[in-house]
Image (cartoon, rainbow, N blue to C red; front, side, top):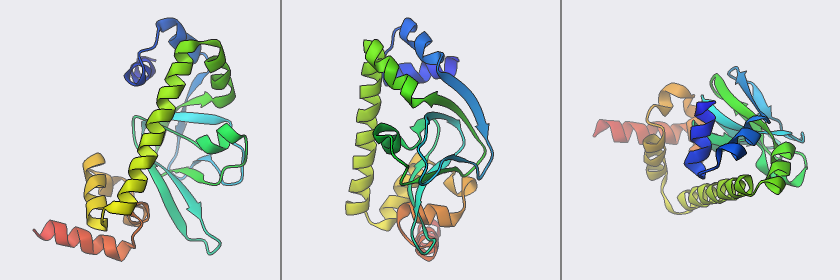
Length: 191
C-alpha cells in the first residue's frame, strides 16, 4: 500500500492514522481492456485511483457517435464523480482502453470518513480543487487552443499516447476527426 500512501501524501500531507482509516475502505482491482468501471445510466458506488493503464470517460449520442470527455492515466483519480456526488445515474460511461490496475474506493464510506476525520476532509477538498482546475484547463484548451496545439499538449502529457490507444480515440478526445488528426501528425512529423 506504499503506492497509495505516497499518492495520498502527494495530494495532501495526511497523518498516518487517517491514511490507515482510508486503507480499510480501499481494494485493489484489475480490469481488462474494454471493461467498464462506470456505465451510462447506472448509479456508481466507487471512485478509483488509477495505478496503470488508460481509462476514458465518454458520451454516446443518439446516433451512436462517441465523444471522449477525458482520458485518465496514472496516477489519477477517475470515476463518475458527478453521479456519485448527486447519487444519480451517470451521464457518462467510463471504460478501460488498456488493461488497468486500480484501487477502488467506496464513495459513501469515503464521504462518511470525511465527516469523521478532518485530515480526510481536507484531502477530499484538495482532490475536488484539483478536479476543478483540470476541468477548467480542458475547457480553456477547447476554447483557446487550435487542434495542433491541443495535440501537442496531449503528447506532452502522454508522450506514447499513439502506442496506447487507437487514433480515433485520440481524435475524439481532441474534438477533431481522425482525418484531421492524421493531417496534424503528418505536418508535425514532416518538419
